Length: 221
Image 1 (cartoon, rainbow, N blue to C red):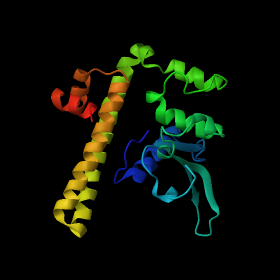
Image 2: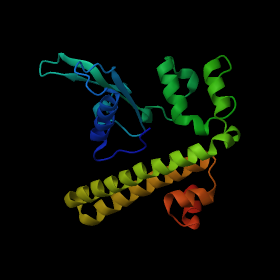
Image 3: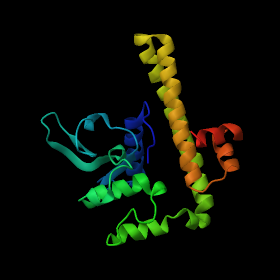
């Protein structure tokens, strides 16, 4: 899951996929018989290539300049979760792929009755993901949150630089203010997600490095 856009996001995706291919090769293998690597990335920011479109999945493959497939050994699926806002009614969704994206995007805020009883698999997922059942996973989720914080921090730095760049065109002060607003929005979203995952304020303070007073203020925004 990628929570916010980053300057080198696409490069990171390619690097991680390439690393997986490299690690799957055995020493001395001259046939390069590695399996297909399909990288699925859930992103919680708007994918520029899908802007203004109803599509929410960007499928990227290795092709030549005539749009012919060069190799099917590496491909990418980028899934734009921003197109599944909480305001959408679950019952309006027709395709299972849409339902999965909606549930992944909004699981932390779903309540009893939001998912119809006949949607068995999604009801089961909801029951298994209730906050009250996360105690046994607390350590694992905490460690995951620490790693995610580094991604969020990079994203905040990127947004700040983007805000600064826009400020060069529209005025230094306005650009810096936009960067601060974007950074604050990202940090607020992250803090609320960590709280929804069952982490205490003390644990969130350790992850973010923010004073507890500031963490509580962000939660109330």
